[in-house]
Length: 217
Ligand code: SAM
Image: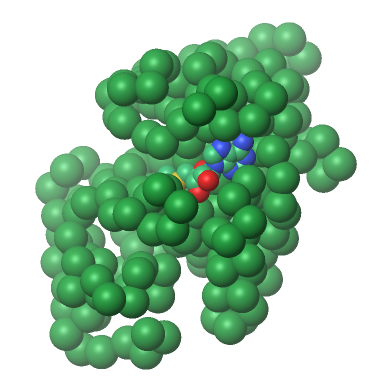
């Protein structure tokens, strides 16, 4: 359903209030969550769940991330208009739309064909100019590097050098890193050619990153 309603807008405002209570402080991120109708990216039979603060199954055993997780990862990246941002794991397309609304030039890559096709079609219908790519995001997107920001929305087994090397100096990467059950949300800033700063932002549970540098599942 690509129409909005007062009821759904009201639910979105409630979700934003919940995110504030959970510690999301970036006004830009909160405005983006308020602006992007999450139900456009949701399985159409479950629109009534679109503004619950939960991850939800989409096609092919994948998920649309929990709104809190989307908001936190986006906040950590401190997106500025014009930033070149690579998202690994397009999924429903919701996270990419949030990045786009924040003014980023968004490159997103998805390895599941049906999800890539659906997101591609949805972005066109919504008039969102997002660069979609089909392939193995564990390799990054070297043909379009370097990026100001990189976001992984699937769990990686370790911090991948080939991805941090696709960052500009002062660029930031946010990624869930750990085992298949639980991962730490790491924020990595590239401060020199081979120098990085790292901080940990809590435990999360994502679907696995597959591909050459991911998990074989
Ligand atoms: N960002 C998505 C959203 O807003 O709906 C949620 C992403 S979902 C949690 C993780 C996605 O990563 C899945 O769609 C999965 O197919 C994708 N994925 C897993 N491994 C990948 C890889 N190597 N390259 C690209 N995408 C991958």
